[in-house]
Length: 593
Image (cartoon, rainbow, N blue to C red; front, side):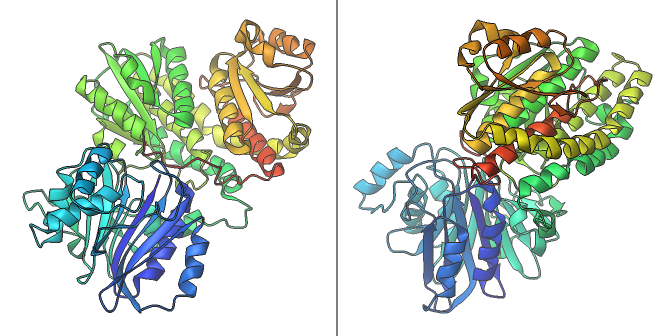
């Protein structure tokens, strides 16, 4: 959620820091700050509540000492403590000798703060992260080496962290990670560390992902303090800032909706060749499974249920859903494959659930958009959904790509284990290859017919989404998108459940969105709504309010409806004056529990 950037560069660091922080905006944040070494060896610290543009304006007016090439920066998404400048990072120790930026959660922060205060330390914020600066200050009393001081300080910490520490005078920067992502790159421009490759992609060709427990001196980015560790694995950088440009679009969400046909085609091209012969599955080295448990949150959970429904329809295997934040509520049965899905691969709830499943000896298959993420490193097998950079906080193209990648690998597993024939698997791949054109056609129709419908609902206080069977995850995704972007309540229900309570919500003009997967029973449910004055918007085949769905559906259900509900949410939100790329209170990568 929060973003970290640290650099030691040959040119002034501030230019790199501000650019990198701007590229981290998409993750969501409510305050921002930097600490930069001056040519005289002091540390200049500037923090602000609000957008990065305010911080940039302050530096344009900077009349202080000349700044040099060492600095750290941070975008904060508030968890511990309100949104104030005092709570913004970086945080200093008492004498101002070091500055610290931190992502993660210090679980024993209250106890540590009490101990440190009793020792005379003065705290200036209410955030958990500030205890780190004072712990490092204490450790520095017994060791002059900053790396060793950081390591000693972290011995007292319980929780997760990715952090960067800047030292006054020397300008040394030490970075460390445990349970929160951090990457390091050594380049001709200088040395960089960041929580997200998007921050530094234009300046690096390859990077190292820090392992849990690593502490590294950034001026020697290729060498770990722990010399017993093996040489780091380097990852080739394939992201570029041009991938995140608007390219003439009004917002990233519009761009990413339109990118769905192309990214769907890419995923199918990458994975499709290994489906019918089972090689995509066998190449993962996973054992045969008899049941599937989907572990995910939000949009990824909805994608997981589409994948699970596909598996169940094709092979009759039992599928269960685990909301990752509630993973402790159930124990998988023997023979279960756990399918963990996370766009970023850093979702804390998913990682915690995966850790519990590893302890229970359940094999983990990850579907993620980041092949070097924590989830990818912890899983037994990984399939990339290859959506490319997604800047809008509300997922669009990653939803579609997760479905395609997950369906591809599960169909491959069924073919490899003889549960479906290779000819059947090949026919399913042919159906997948038709999806890009279907998605493109759906976008064209939706952008034409949805705006007038959205105009009808600007005064509506809430929405209901209904469907049956394979359509239900798409109804769930539609409700999620609408509430994320419009800040109006929106709920989804199995259509047959309306009469068991939700019909009480329906009055004159209540918008009820029907994702029509062709189930004939929907006609009765629609009539129930209309009899009570509800306004039906039917996303279905020709003759529907939003005719985007083909009559012949694959086992993954009405995936074209995803485009329609995305357009509906975006159009309504824009009409209400919402920021569709950065909805309030939300972040792109949710790294807190």
